[in-house]
Image (cartoon, rainbow over all chains, first blue to last red; front, side, top):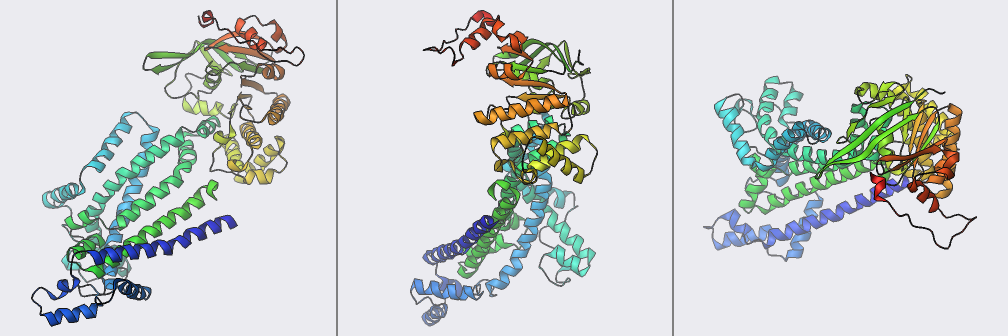
Length: 337
Length: 278
């Protein structure tokens, strides 16, 4: 128990160091980029006085290390600066954009896990049979079809042709600002308000982009599950389990799957973290106002505060999930305790 | 005459390869009552496959044919999965070579024994746990509570093999197949485990198939010894009659053993006759 706690403490101690490195690198990449943040704000018709004054306001007259220390100081107080593009604080922006991504990523990973894991297990158990080959083809398509093609096809089929799904966006204009924002996850907010119409609308809008992302992730998850399961099923302890006269389902799920849970958790956590970074292409095709879109648009507009803030959020998310996988690893595998 | 547990006639096991079928077991016939039978042979001689085929626990690509393949009157080759499950564990247990790989690494020893008990006996979790502790005591583990809580990687090889034996004895089977149960253990532990196996089998009146490549050891613990070579049974004799072995392979094996009473400056090397394969 003490050893476990110490190992956990070691992992936790590495978090601030990693974060500091992330801030450092992102900050300096932002500063050495050949864009003029002043120009981005005042435009190219401003007078020299205005340019000079803005420069001073942004603190760009100081040396880079000093600028970095000032940024760090503000960061410590939860201040990520103001976005030039939206003229809101970056914190406010992210608290609007990140939930959209979170809603999308969560829906996608849920679908992907619920379908991908059983498919992977089935493929491994039926290795070499027609079922295995069918699943392989399904997954291969998920891997190899570019996601924007898949996204556009879904819109074409379900929205444009069949008319059974809503178009791009997070919700219908009818429902905009009708439900009080609590979490900024539209489905959850609608549920809190008890507004079923708004809930159904949000869910319907979520279905397509989440489905596309889920297909992509499902293919990966199923393939990894299959590989892990094949490894586990070839273990001697599977022969032992069968020799005990256990039913096939118990041999597969309790003995084989029980042994891959650890590795699978790592894969799932990192896949989820990857989705939370914001899927730029999917968000663009479906006009989904998520973090991926925010980051891309900010970058194209040289909105450095926004880029830095969004990058930090992505970094923290990644670190968080790495940590979570680490903790679960210790819980699930008696050998690393 | 004790009841016949295993009755095998003309068993052949083949595996498809790039070059066609590869025969691993050729026309093996074997009967076993409540007795201790040793199967001896080198790696690849088909001894493990023969024993595992009794429980139909062969690799899925194995092609098995036999004129007769019965366990206690049940046709193993034609049995459905549910019928096989009633044999596996319940009536015949299988002990594998290395507990490091043969025990599930993420389940405690106690869980694994209780699971075997519960698979074949109706009872509560509490009863299964009590049975597991009792079984651990029967395999002479001094601290059953602690071992039951341990994971396989926390146990020594000898301890692990005791857990394995306890697990296979849980449903009280009539036959125990021990597939090289001591090859992965230290020499001193080997003797302990074999003595334990022998005592348990005798006390419970079970049949035992002991697979090994150690001829004197098998002769010491078994009533009857079968020698396999290249998928065939080349010799079958009473354990006491080892010195009367007729097949040149068996004779060769015995000659290769170093002895303290008649030391030789150089051990003979077995010369293999291709005719043995015929």
